[in-house]
Length: 132
Image 1 (spheres, rainbow, N blue to C red):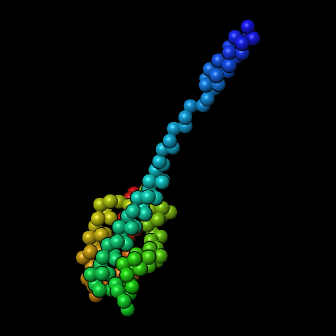
Image 2: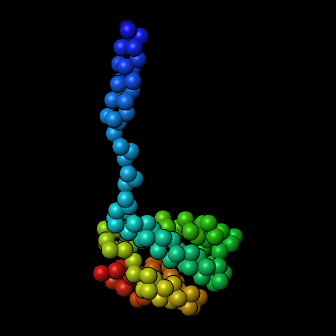
Image 3: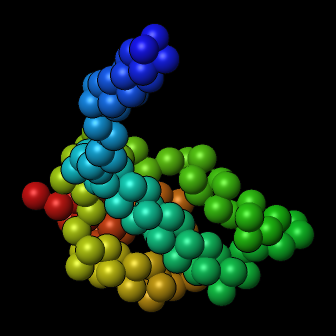
């Protein structure tokens, strides 16, 4: 009799314990702000890559050049920053069509013209690139 009572208590506590377990937490959805940050960063990376390709084409990468290597080019350009394209100044992100125009402009830029600031190029200014 005691044995049956113990088994009943055990089964009841087991079943009751399962009933009180909280349901698994759903995965947190990605917020628009986190996607925008990522989009801005990807766009900035694309601009840096295109600028470094131009620097290589213009023979500004290598020993005794403006940039010692491709990695040095990326590092220096990213270190100089793109504050005008960050989330604070471009909260809606970068317009993909405008970004393509900017990248094409960088690619077409003549070697004799220094590209020390991305804002020097009309097609790459934040006013053109930032989505509304």
